[in-house]
Figure: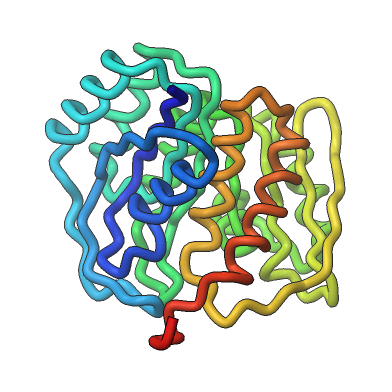
Length: 251
């Protein structure tokens, strides 16, 4: 059995966070494990309330999962508190998992801030070096890099500089860039790998970031290279969201 661990918040709508991560892992042949960082009240459009779990409770979840199961891949999503960042960092140092993908969730789709600048700096210094990949959207990348990126080329130039500083690889997602096609780039210490695909408009898009990062982690756990995992996860995302439409009550 292949085991996948998601470290993220619960989504009461079931479309993102822990719930979506576990659905993705199941679809890709994993037994999904979870360490919940926070509880949210939300729908497909916005978060109305968020309550972090205690650092002690998170540590107990992580310890029991990491001690008990040979975990192939880990996805980290919304962490919800500064104390939880420290717990995750210490557990990753202790157990040293090889495949860790961090979806840098700094705010919700509706604009609710989940992290402030102080916490973001701690993420960069402590957590980034323990990951295989981070997957920020345009706005998150600009916040983390403290620079504006009007185009993908701007973002690539910044990411090339930041890659060594952050000690991780960066997937620059193309959804928020103003291009007719989705243009993305994987930036690693070894080089820049550009990707392009048709822009697909989904009737429902809540949880696409969670889906992509979880799928990348799953494909890494199956032995794919970082670039191959990004391609495979992108194809999986399109396939899944072309089929899913929870707004359709007749389904």
